[in-house]
Image (cartoon, rainbow, N blue to C red; front, side, top):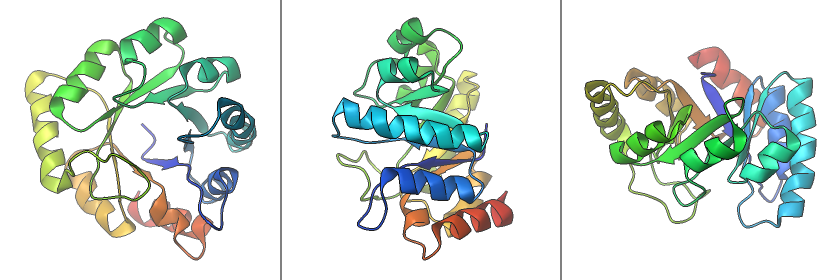
Length: 206
C-alpha cells in the first residue's frame, strides 16, 4: 500500500486538476479523483486529464464513486462510499484487475467491505473536515487503535488508510496506531507551496 494518497479538491485558488498536479509534483503516487455533485461528463473530462498526469508520474489513478467511468477510462481502481454501489457489486462489474477501496467509519463497515472483496479501506474521519458533507462520527487516535484491534481479533487482514482532516503533525501518531496509509487533501492545498508541502510530508514522515 502506497503510504500517502491524495484526494482531489477544488478551492478558490486551485482546480481539481491543479490539485492533482501539485500532489504529483510533490512526489505523491496515488491520486483519487473526487468530484462530488459534478455532472458525469465533467468528471470524465477532468478524469482523462488527471489520468494522463498520473501515467506521466507512474502514479495510481483511482476514481471516487463512478464504477462505470473507472471501467471506461481503464483507471487503476475505484473508491466507494457507504452510499455508493456496494463493493461486491462493483467487483462483479470490474473483475479482479481493478483496485476497489471502501469508505468505513466502524469495524462493521470494514467487515462488510472485506467480505465484498475490497482491496483497502479508507477509514475516517480522523477529525472534522470541511471537505466532506454529512460527516460520520470522528474517530481520533483511539478510534483507529480500537478498529485495528478488532480487525486483528477477527482475522481481517486488509490495508487501512486514515482520512479526514489530517495534518502533517498528526501523521506520526496515526501511523503508530497501525494504519498502513494516510489520505490528504486540505492540509496540502492550504499550504503556501502545496507541492513543497507534499514533498516535505513524504520526506519527513515516510
